[in-house]
Amino acid sequence: MLKKYPIILSVLGLALVILFIWYFSNIVVYVLISAVLSVFGQPLVRLFDRIKIGKINFPHSISALLALLIMIAVLAGFVWFFVPLIIGQAQIISQIDMGQVMEYFKEPLSDLQDFLLRYDIIHTGETLQSTIETQIKAALSVATFSNIFGSIVSATGSFFFGAFSVLFLTFFFLKSEKMFSNFVLLLVPEKYVEETKHIMQKSNHLLTRYFIGLLTELVSMITLLSVGLGILGIKNALIIGFFGGLMNIVPYLGPLIGGTIGVMIGISTALSYGMYDAVLLIGIEVVAVFLVANLIDNILLQPLIYSNVVKAHPVEIFLVIIMSGSLAGIPGMILAIPGYTVLRIVAKEFLSKMRLVQKLTEKI
Image (cartoon, rainbow, N blue to C red):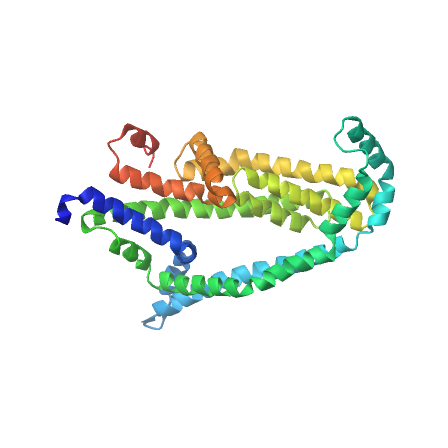
């Protein structure tokens, strides 16, 4: 009876899978993160597997554990290096004397207020100086940082549960390289097993290249920004470079967000040291370094990663990122390229007769 309605069964099956992914979205995220981490860890596992103690091969479980420990150590080292810098920056910002700042900029603010009043941008009863002072105090106060850390502490339980889940799954994905793919195959009808194997093999190849390329881009941008700002003598160049480079994980909007954070850190640091006359110059220098670094990124790095690596046209990638951002915001923009890559591979395998699919997948 059921064999008469294959399309209905397929649609119901797909609906159940989507419902499962939506309902257990946290678990799905843990699994996907673990699968990505295992991609980076597998070369280490293979390296340790080649080690011999006398005539005895290195135990595969120990190889997986060592690879996981190395990845944890790299992440811990990263946190150990940057967290004290961030805390120090927060303490520096909290020491800004807002009274002196507002007194120093009193005349320019008065001129600006007259301009805004003239064009009815602010109302007559409003004082630009008091408004700015209140907002800056609220933004830079120690209480704000305390609230941030309070939020972090309140989320510690869920964070540690998520971290443990990811590490646990990553270890077993490292230990059994085909565990994730075998699990996926269990969910696929038997007649589509071979096509699914091909899809996973191709996806693994392209996504590995993408993630390695993305990591290379982030490290390159952090280096470019930090070195450029350091040459100009900008204080806390490493922190600005770190945040600026890290924001590049968000396509197109990332450099704007990173540049804004960089300018805020640069200016607030200058204010904390009483360098009021250098505020404008520091802001311009930070913006200039970000522009040069992102020009290098756009010309050299991004075409390699977002176009050549995933084998898609830059305009195609741009439209996918914009649509994903409209649907799911910044997380959608981050996941747009890897998600679109997998969709193209699936479409090529099952919808290869469609001319649109043939055009979009001709390079993969």
